[in-house]
Length: 280
Length: 357
Ligand SMILES: Nc1ncnc2c1ncn2[C@@H]1O[C@H](COP(=O)(O)OP(=O)(O)O)[C@@H](O)[C@H]1O
Ligand SMILES: [Mg+2]
Image 1: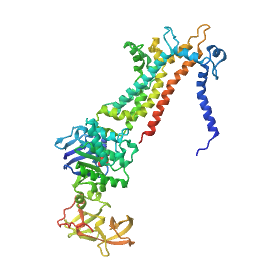
Image 2: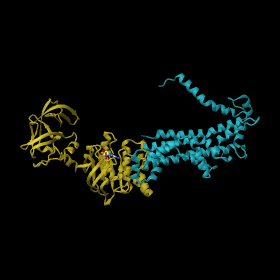
Image 3: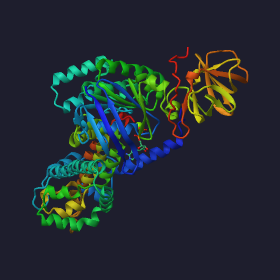
């Protein structure tokens, strides 16, 4: 039996508060009017303008063209998140499959070459990437937003390690059972990788969801606005005596948190199930 | 159902390892042949060449009347059972067995019929919807066998299928495999390093050493007339004692002690004596100094030295033994091997076919 130690709990409670407080502040402040926030600072108690603010944020048309609503931005962020997650999983799984199961010359060399280049952060290769997309005429398109960032060192590396841990006999049994390379991949490797896929999905969804710089550069058309840009643009209206709509920024931030939370909760359950189910 | 023929088959791995050298074997239709040898002697390599999982470097592998050297494993009409079962972890027992048939586009009702039949034969019916992880080791291996059976292949290949099981289960599974193979009469090639498994299962044994065939024969034949000192020491438990001896004037001697008459040319020999062929007698010709005794219940193994060389004797007595014993042995129980080549020396005297009582 573990003894309950007060000090441990104190540390845990403080830690939890430390993590949760900013979220609570954002949520509470979003229910107050902008002017109140401007004059009184942040709130820890709920205010009376919540419904109105969230309604406005989700449906009111804004931007220069007057077409951008919160829902549109939410949709765009969703496309980015899911596009990234799914695309990266598909691409890195197939890449890892080729690297592990097909013997071609310099495979290891190629792997490490890919790996090191992909380890460079996006910011380093953002100009050449932009150049390529611009030449291909893919600016202001979902393709241009998603495809160039799909190659994933992390994903490829994780899947490669996972495939290497699958016993060779499984491949051999499948070969004797008449499964070709494609069938083996689809019938055996993909189902076995579910845990891995869930983990990568969480990471990559949030990566895509939080993208700011790349959409900022790639798109000029406001219909491609994502939540991250929306939050930023609300805060950027500091002209003359106008004050930013703090409440709306907070509301958007709170909204922006919800889908990642859902993804984490759903996939974590799959993830843990996968971990406890696998036997080896 | 088919014959499996290996003609002068050899395998050299990329690193330059000669894993299999010049193997000639013919497995008859419906025969159960066991490949046995110490670990690393090339058994798996040979089996995998028949399966098509490993390229054949030299020679020719035939299944039935087809040369299969370059054929895909799936096209060789064989089924294989692996040591670690190699079941698909995410598929139910039924799907595991059905997978190979599905890939061959077997009609659905035919698949169901064959899987159900195999499940009945292997007593797996209650587990058909379970995942492999919810099964015990023995049940998993039965599923692996079921997967082989439903395919109705021309040959079964087994690579140490019982090595992951505990001793008791191993014995019962051994019987089950034997019964199943007799019933289905499917040509089988079975790899093991366990000589007992080999002896009990095989119609014919192939003893492999360093990638080459040392002896081929029925289990009892190999046991009674091992073709070399290596086979003599490998087959049989407790292992045959091998003594440095010499022959002069038609007598085999260990040190200065005459053991028994031996009809081979005079000179140095390796003398093999099975522990069960030796008897402890009051006036036997061989003096033995007892080292320690292993009690097995039904019998005991007495370990000791003759002329400074290790020797073992089995006997069924229960009373305590003196430190010094005398052993005697029938002339027919002597195994004589060439000192240099290790090959068996042909004796001119006909050897009585008596099995020790
Ligand atoms: N893929 C391989 N590459 C190189 N050498 C191998 C390979 N597989 C086995 N060997 C070598 O070939 C020899 C025979 O191996 P194996 O057939 O597995 O023996 P066994 O099954 O009798 O224990 C061993 O010396 C082993 O080290
Ligand atoms: Mg082996």
